[in-house]
Image (cartoon, rainbow, N blue to C red; front, side, top):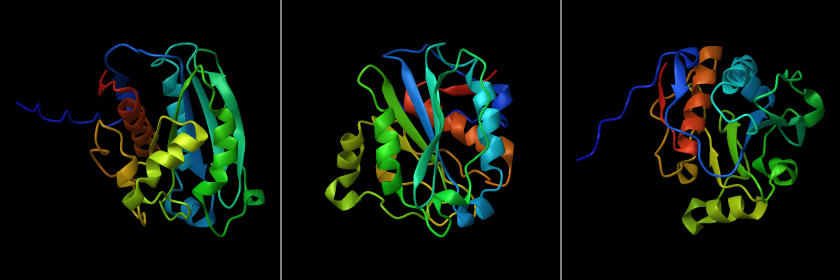
Length: 209
């Protein structure tokens, strides 16, 4: 008998990760699309990421890590891997120096690939409208090839209102797609999208605190 889906909490601050952490230390990489189109459609992405980073410290193991990469036509690491058990502040998002007319996932290959190390379980969450080039070719199984090439275990892209593509079906992990579409104009909803993505990537449910 299939169990019914558990509704998400309304706000991330009211949620926690259920279960117990397992496996090697986690390195969570969040890639933020800073192209003009994404910034206009998802104006709350940066403050939502800030709120998520604060919440994260109480939910993962002290030696699990968060890294942040900003991207558009090019990409740059904004936050080098930082243990979530220690206080840290996110630097301000990078701006037009990364290009602003388009976004491509290909730009992430070098910076994100350099963050993948053998002794950590490295996963990626992409915050974007989904209007990207360089997406995997799902018909040929290119998604798995693309992930394997840079050493990532899995990628999530939450679906947002006002997005052109949102969720990339071939990149949903075995836990299934995001159960809802998030509002990129609401920082609390962006933070919740990140929390739900983390829950799916770690196999730990996001439950009411």
